[in-house]
Image 1 (cartoon, helix red, strand yellow):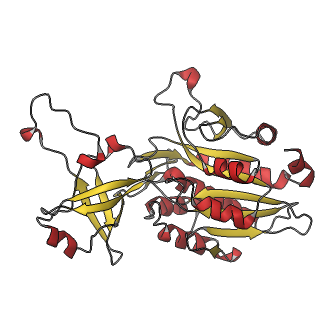
Image 2: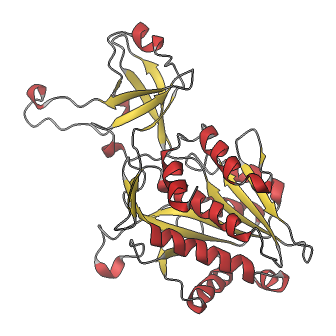
Length: 350
């Protein structure tokens, strides 16, 4: 499978928070040469060890995507649901979703929108999830349950990823953080025959979108000395004034100095920026007024220097996103150069 096919498959994988099984299975298949380890949260870890050092570099990308979960089925067969992670509520109405039933089958449905014929004058549609319903084309609770749908059934957007070869751009769902997962897989593919000065551990973690839960289990097991967090970050190039754009498509990797969860270790950040400049890898620097990552969780709980290497994604946390292959490739290049340059002396200075 080539890189483009891998990114498409990862985007299409069903995997909202807590239901990452399909993504985990895909990663295990792609990195089988590393004999992946899997825990009961579905966190996947791989490693490439060096005889020269006991220092551990952890590279993490989270597998889960924002989604929904069935809360209850109404007597008329429609479904009440809650969000799994910070899905964009305004993007829900009128969009199609897939529910995984108790047999693992995908049942399509739509978040209902009242036709204009029945809309009262000056009526404003609500963005409250508690007032929305998902319709799977049934007319009773019994009929919906007969489809194998019940309380706790997980839901994701019904989107198939497309790739435009001419423009080298992907159009699909779940690039937060499947594009980061793709970067992580490719990094380990390219590292297979490299001789490194430190031990490299790959972490593909679960349940980031609901509170960075899986990363803690992996980090406590790996006990890293530094962390490189791989993310699909929200692109801002269609919203911000030019001087405020810090994560544009086709401008390279985004390195954040701060978000609401972490002030990045400035020594490790400078090391990454210097490497990027030396190797002529395009980067974008950002100071964010929102957002948070697995990097913050490891930084706060274990005191580990962490940086976040992000691929810009337009319209993150909604059903349809844009991401470019060139930004993905630059993220792969930067992470490879970082892990090849890291050694005990450098890590001690962070």
